[in-house]
Image (cartoon, rainbow, N blue to C red):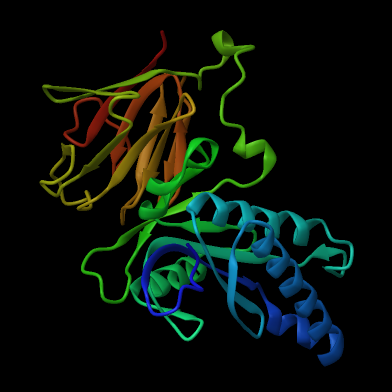
Length: 305
């Protein structure tokens, strides 16, 4: 069912896409050339939408709003937009490709007079504003609707407030490029690859926790609703998450003070509002440099079958 079903409430994927830095295009290229370039981007967006059973609801300057019957079709169209605009020889300024950003959310909408309304539309628009050039950003609700390859191509990167919602909404980046969308890690060379794991074992004080296919996400922070509750004045309420996908474990920091990781080989990393792949084994420390006996230090080791 598409959003053309006037007078009914339906569940659809709402997608927004816009040209990044269009104001700069007008300044550099002049009114007519910039307008032609933006129009070409809109044509690509419209064609991709129609190719994957989408409905263009409206265009607004350098932006398009569309709906799709399913989340998979919305991401198929979004990836097509990114690929075609990035590869077009006509869409280049000073040798650099024009970029777009895309946001998407799946949920109920109210359809009236060939337009759609409701919180789903606002959330989708918010995802677009959170996206950077060349990115596709979506929500947990959308990821829950995805199948197969697209679900495995989504990674949690941050959270953001949404008007009308009490809690911040997790933001997922969709890895749309061909080399990133590969759904399975190649088996050749796994034994030499420290990043290939099937389990991540954590130790903190007297607790031992396991992340694997049965429990692919673990949250860490000082709030009691976290899976691992770590108290401390440098620890945020939701400090970090660890996710398991495609035989790799990724730590995503959401904190004010950041997260330190020291691997067993001595390599040290610091992440703040960013992500890091966990390899081998070592220590994770919340808000401070790892110390073996610190209450903020979590030990980890990647295991494989």
